Image 1 (cartoon, rainbow, N blue to C red):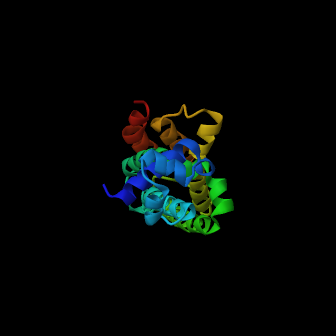
Image 2 (image 1 turned 90 degrees about the vertical axis):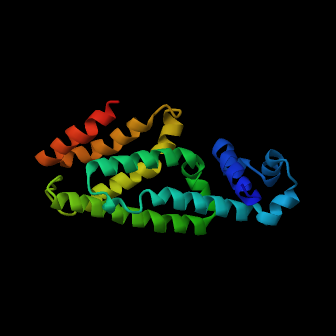
Image 3 (image 1 turned 135 degrees about the vertical axis):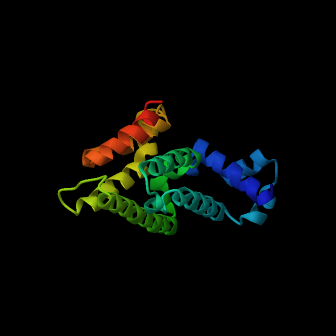
Length: 205
């Protein structure tokens, strides 16, 4: 593993454990048993390091949600939810420190909004595809966007809410249930059958 990669991995772990505001370059250097000067050779400042860690973490996280509409079946969508859940934990600081990122790193926040918007569009496309395949039924076509926005909001803030209100006591299947139960009211009979056969048994494990 390269020195730059080691710095990234240790920084990510410290950000997750202590939060962005409570970590300094000296803290990272001490953990790595290297000088701050050596660390600064790879990342000239703490701001450079934060931007790199956040941007890389965000891109990996969003790679899970960037192609929702390529998931043709409920089981594929459910598998993506599982992947997203574990990445939420891998990049916990990103959710817990979202306000700090907004206030201190506005350019990063704008990039976050850009990627989030793409994920929202992909979610809406997935919903529309399931409407066309008769797995979902809406009384009003505009509900596809409303549901996509609700799901995206839930995914963005689930980890923060769980950390603050429930002391990280939830598990992966709780997250998946939380998302599926928002979709459940819009299932057609065909969609309910698909859910009961392919998804519900997995949620009960």
